[in-house]
Amino acid sequence: MTSEVYFANMRSHNKEGNLVNKLSKLFKKAGFDELINEEDLFGIKLHFGEEGNNSFIRPMFVRRLVEEIKTVGGNPFLTDANTLYSGTRSNAVDHLNTAIANGFGYSTVLAPLVIADGITGKNFTDIKIDGKHFDEVKIGSEVVHADGMISLAHFKGHELTGFGGAIKNVGMGLGSRSGKQMMHATVQPEVTAKDCIACHKCEDWCAHNAITVNEISEIDLEKCVGCGECLVTCPTDAISTQWDDAPIAVQERMAEFTLGVVKDKMDKVGYINFVMDISPLCDCCGWTDQPIVGDIGILASKDPVALDQACADLVNQQPGNKNSALKSNFEPGEDKFRGVHPKVDWEAQLVHGEKIGLGSREYKLIEL
Image 1 (cartoon, rainbow, N blue to C red):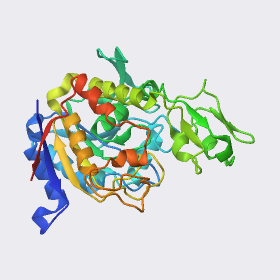
Image 2 (image 1 turned 90 degrees about the horizontal axis):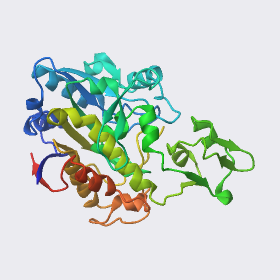
Image 3 (image 1 turned 180 degrees about the vertical axis):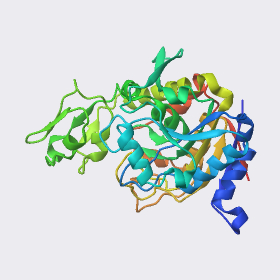
Image 4 (image 1 turned 45 degrees about the horizontal axis):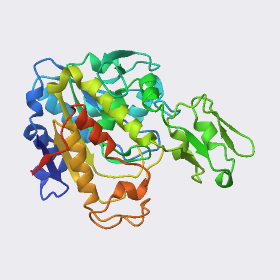
């Protein structure tokens, strides 16, 4: 089955054609107005950005989406679940303070912020699925009780999954803290002694007291939950993953959590990806690196698999930025995500997503 994916490019020639107005056109063209009934409690799942990061989706776009949902009678709220790693979003108080500091206060976005898994990440609902890895998944309860949802994702690279798009935004994003631990269970980091400078950064960022630093960093795998924060925190790349099948397993588990989120509201969910500021790492980092390719545009679909596939294809069709983290694959048509994360097969999330019924990798790209 071929799914429809709608695309608005970055070009604008007048006020009517600016990107914020293009988002409204995508909302209607993709049929998202048809997902919403009068008085529906409708979540907008987005990443509020870590403190110090600046590549998250701009609040002006979120405000326009809020306005569109209200126009058709919906009652929107912004949501995300708490993080597994130590940072500025691991509990609801810090999470909300970070969101507001990054521009997502009510006065700007015109909607309340609701942390999906509660103040400490323990407010979750077990959703039964028939998956390869899980029989049931732990989803933030506030999203489970919503009538519908739109995923608003920043499409970018990711150190464990190759890229992060709609599937990661929904599955990893809305799993409770314990759910995130379930998804990361196969990831085990290791330290290359000759590269470690004993700077203590990994120890400071580890939320689970799994790292101690003597002459070098030492990781207690009994305590490690596999969140991967130490990988992106290490300034010398001395910490790497014992890969084996870890990236594939994480992606498959993530896709199964996505299925858990949307299982009871398949016909009430839309997905929008912003393929802009395409950084090599997740927005969970407290910084933003140079984009690996130029800005492309905004895409929307009711099919998260088709949407992520189309976004990945568009990124790979671009020339790579030689002043970025790309190590190879600079030519159009070459795999940019492998150029940054050569050991990660990012297609695994799409293959498994299609297999479990999330959507289709076959798509028709319709440009506005």
